[in-house]
Length: 358
Image (tube, rainbow, N blue to C red; front, side, top):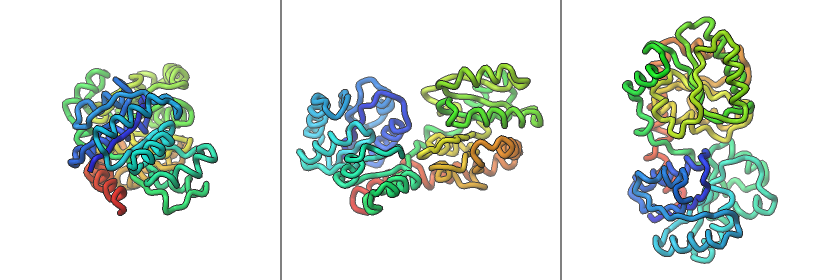
């Protein structure tokens, strides 16, 4: 099958990561894949080591005629069986181009806030495939009146080879942080703002540190509330055990350094790619029991689901996972779980089924 993905967002977002991983997955499965993407942007760079053919374009909005020309030119070269879109600004252009060139269109929706009324009604009905990235997101669209028959679910694929645990990387990262190899490392990766639950996590982690001297917290990310969190940590007695590395474009090597990952959001998440990636590396996950997060792990087996913002519950869960035997068993189960449910091979096969009517 020939697929032309269109995604000209320059930013590093969850939808961008999904775009790269799905395009790579379909190419690895033997399909001919092209991608119209922002030149030298993060998606362009992410596809640089794959077999996906890249076409540079800047699609600023629905009225950008240069974007239409670029997509039509790429489509005439590749002659795709499907056009695939991931970003809202390209929904209408892809539907119009699909009608013009008589190519079916598959559109992914990564967010649950409502679209404008006309778009919310027409886009799921005009696209030949309209896909949500979680059951939680699908239900949100159904609650707004989209017929259930029009919304399919396809989870984010994860390159499990890219997430493979590497003991050498673990040793190197721990050494760079001044930590012993027997350190227990709780990790957070993502945007730093209150809705992500970073402040309750800090309280829970600091309280757990009072009982577990080998426990450290590794903070990967940045955002509007990062300065406040850093100041809070600097004033705490556990200051030397909270390590802030800022924004990391490629966090995959850092999964090897983690003993467990926290996904503590108190605002609803559509999915949770970082949860799946961590588990692919054999890292158990502590996740908030809301939104799409429960769909990313097997509670009690590959991690634990916890009440959002409940500092006492999170403290107890962190201490529970400080048990080496539990960490080892959950880590092994986590890796297998991701291979069975979120690997590139599994998601590529499911996407093909969806496109061909399965």
